[in-house]
Image (tube, rainbow, N blue to C red):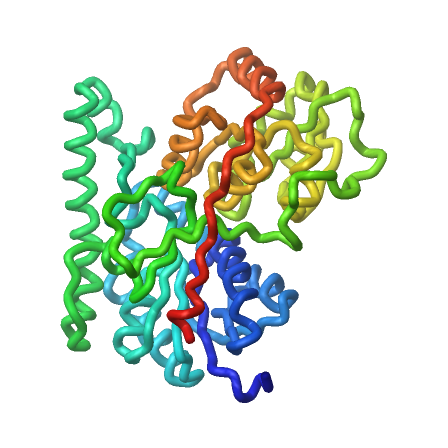
Length: 392
């Protein structure tokens, strides 16, 4: 179909690599029927352009400053003035490009902009961020209330956590509702409702993040893994680091994504870990350059993971989904609460564990030595469903 005759689709991912990547994967299935355009991002648009998609200018939040605030449970970035500025910019983009549909991935005010512009909205969400999540969002160990609640019975702790969570979601929503009221839009009860779409695609496996009583407009599609082609699990691809790895050693991949803190894995610079092949991806400051066997800026999952025995990471959704796909255990040094929820789900399934709060060098060595030898059974990733009927 002639590109000029295709209807436009605008994509607004939150400004982190994982969100852009899974929007790219989703958009690959749309490109034959739609002109897909992504919100421009200084450090992520190169991946978009590499896929042959175009970008459009729009104001937004930068991912890194937001993550730093979330570490301290600071939601001041979701203030009415900032939301309004970005909301207006999004409406302008929608009016300029006249899309038939808008796609958002964990971006706070896209739903509001699409609603104001009268355009259908498709939302991509992690399983733990839906109102129908059947699990428990554990209170972060970094939260000031964590230790006072820890001494209580588990049922009390979960109930109090849920009550506090609901109060927080309602408080955050007040700034959005103020703008909604000003523009004559429907008021919402809490922030989780602000994230859902006319169709909401859940990009997680229900085995890790179960859902309860999902309405028909919520569709679990499973993880959207950014890669060249899916690995069929048969023959490993050619090694991306020929001659670099010692075949007598186990191999550890250290990947802190775009939202992790490399200083948290600085303990791996200990000469003790030279007993492993250490592969790093994204270590821009060279935190592990003294022990790294191979260093890369970016590696595709299907290129590197078939050669890896253990992943040490930040607990990001995309990284852990890749570990699940390739049946590789993961150890995590998290940076903020959503990453804690991710590794908590993995830990419950025996597929990895959190290293948060572990400072003993001896204990860290024991844990890593043990997990580097674990062979995990393969588990299904879940079937991705087609939702093009909705778009067509």
